[in-house]
Image 1 (tube, one colour):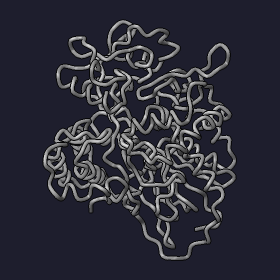
Image 2 (cartoon, one colour):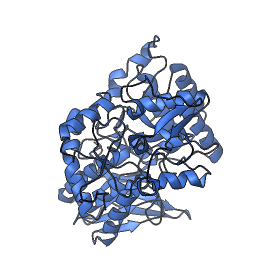
Image 3 (tube, rainbow, N blue to C red):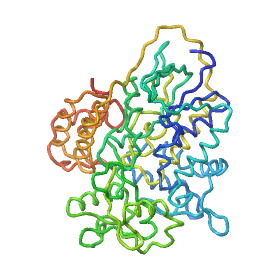
Image 4 (cartoon, one colour):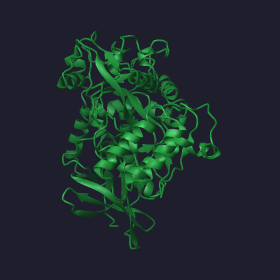
Amino acid sequence: MRADAPVLIVGTGVAGLATALAAAPRPVRLLCRAHDGVGSASALAQGGIAAAMGAADSAGAHAHDTLVAGAHHNDAAAVRWLTSAAPQTVAWLAAQGVAFDRDEDGALRLGREGGHGVPRIVHAGGDATGAALVQALRAQAQRAAHIQWRGGVDVEALLWRDDRVAGVRTRDERGREEIHDAAHVVLATGGIGNLFARTSNPPGADGAGLALGLVAGAAARDLEFVQFHPTALDLPRRQGLPLVTEALRGAGASLRDARGRPLMEGVHPLGDLAPRDVVARRVWEACQQGGAWLDATAVADWPHHFPTVLAACREHGIDPRTVPIPVTPAVHFHMGGLAVDLDGDTGVPGLHAVGEVACNGVHGGNRLASNSLLEGVACGRRLGTRLATLPWAARGQGATRWIERGPGLDHHALTALRQLMWTAAGPQRDAATLREALRQCGAWHGWQARLAETLLLAALRRAGSLGSHWRRDARAAQRPEELRPQAACDQSAHPMPP
């Protein structure tokens, strides 16, 4: 590699952008599929940023709620660090130009979402916080002299030289290849929602970065933990679904079943504001029994506080101010990913990961609402700061080889895989369905099928229910080969199947 090779960051959501900005003055090249850098899950995030900013709140209370939501499967030290860093992260974002919502006196408006004991959610533009963050950080990155953009390309392989990752190969929409040398490669590619039939994620959240990191030899962690947002807009025959923000329930909206009865009554002490895994399972059950609706007709000031949801509903002929909103669970966030420490180190020399593609243990078995944007920015800043101080690598002279993600599935097979994953690895799971899904995956040849197999194996090996991973057969006898890898599931070691 050249001594002046840049840091390559794959992905332009908040994690990738925060990493790029914090890496100054080191040269950075941002690589993304979209020409204009848009299309990340970050930009679609309707929730805000969780931070202990109120007088009655504390980082300790935020940490407690994070651990409870995560079923205490979290890395406690990572939780303490993130919740302590949250107020400073909000202040840094404000300095980057994010216009957070404030009251008449200029104080931050703090909302409350599921799993939080007190109001601590900072919003920007009501339910458009993610878009506000991405817009502000993208503007800063476009002005930064140390950052170069390269859009319209897909990273399909990693370059291995001198016992480390030393670059990538990209392909554009015309099929043209380009090789990029790198001092370090950062995967900030987001989640896996598009492996499922129903998701709130954008099309680019297909697990491509996770698959590439696993092929490169990075360990996986907690792959079985997939968060299902309880309230996506239920649109028939649609895979990508608009989100109906949890903040609506914080503002007084309530979930109802097909007969108009309160859906969460007697299910959890927090009712409609119970942790997401609890609410998602209840909504899933209601959808099997006639449907689920969110009655938000009593919520005030829709255009100011919930413009995104209002626009999405009205686009499909629903006025949420006068009629309940039909809702369904949808894949929203992957707590699992490439196993990293808080510095984003994957253990593969030269390869780092940050954001949803990575797993540092902070979310545990179920992410607390509005901790994702927080993690992406805080961990991105931490990784970027570290990359700025790492010594330059010597010019590489050794033999090279390519670490290939491999060909993908065709449209027909991918559609079938998504439905299979929705059925087998949805909010409720069991061993028989997981085994059958593994058998069917074996008939497909494509990196998406191999990644799906890895997730299904993790879900099969975790015989008990924990957090978002809910086994209907948790009390049934399990086969010895399903129990034996249980401890490994807690930390890492889920290689991609051959």
